[in-house]
Image (cartoon, rainbow, N blue to C red; front, side):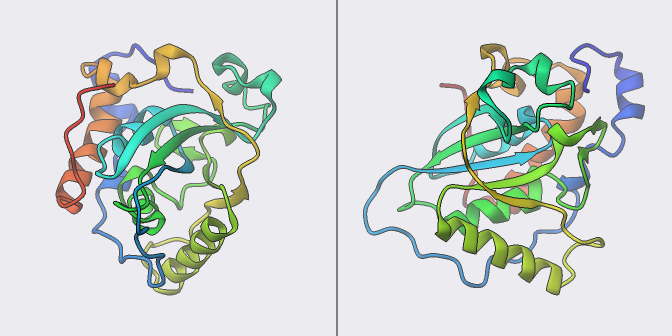
Length: 222
């Protein structure tokens, strides 16, 4: 479980491997991605990749993304609170709901960002200093097209040996998404001086800007 208040020196040591997902070269795009939609609309994607602060800080800066919300998926409504999820007994994963315009960005492009800079998909039940099943890597698919694209992309990346270890990302149906407490929303934006944010999340934002300049947008809040 991460600490919200932590000494900078200790943070630098503890979180030394935190930015690993942002340091590898860009990964190839999905070979059989869906086409952009003919008309603007709203579609939903839900991803879990470690602490939801950092995952949100990436996706809210992607062109074509209309809105993001942090929350919990994988467990029941009765246990969808931060204190309970942090106990690692609820089945929930810290998740981010991404509302996007399929006429401006494809699901495959979102997957590429998820695997490239949002997290390290080869870490099992952890990301950097955060350890437990609530920090596992998961794609919660909303329909069969998302299911097919996610499975195909993982198979492609593993076959191409893009990562030094196999991808451990789970691909499971989205049964429910429960919005997290208000103080977690846009946490990285509102707490830029937090050492955890500086060490774990800022590198992901910079990697997004460097690796996907055509998709990067500035974000100043809702």
